[in-house]
Image (cartoon, rainbow, N blue to C red):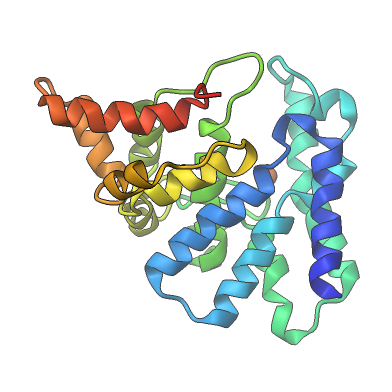
Length: 245
Ligand SMILES: [Fe+2]
């Protein structure tokens, strides 16, 4: 009952915001990869999973003209969109989560906090940000910058990783960035592929399982990569680009 209620809430935001449809589900999947890498217990995993699914639910309270806007937001519009965190809080507060699940709200409402205290909406800093919220911050940004928008192509993966690396200790908890960059890329590629019909070929699955995002970054930024290294980077990019259809 609780699970289907949560999924219904999550799909209502996907229906409102076509641009980011699928976002919550991918943020959940990336967060679960981090959680598994950290070896957190089942209860923590469940809490973070639900928080990830619901983190942007407050966007149902944001005006369409702002939510669907393709160009740059004005200051006023940006302030309005930031309100989605407070709305998420209000919605989850009204559900009346019991003691075991109260943390879901804390975590969901911390996904825009930054490690150096410059985020929103409570301007929490460092370890004051709930651990799950710090995990969501990494997954949320990674999905936002690796997703294709109809007004721009996907960002090259090296630039994506650069953003994560530059955000260590400013935007993100550095330890969690490092954990994320150690996840085998076959698992990351499977999240990319959740929404199209392409399957990761067994042979490629095996090849990509030997590398992580840090390896892709090193091979992709090398001055003189070997032929083998070039092939691995382009195999990753083949799945990342989404152009294999
Ligand atoms: Fe958000």
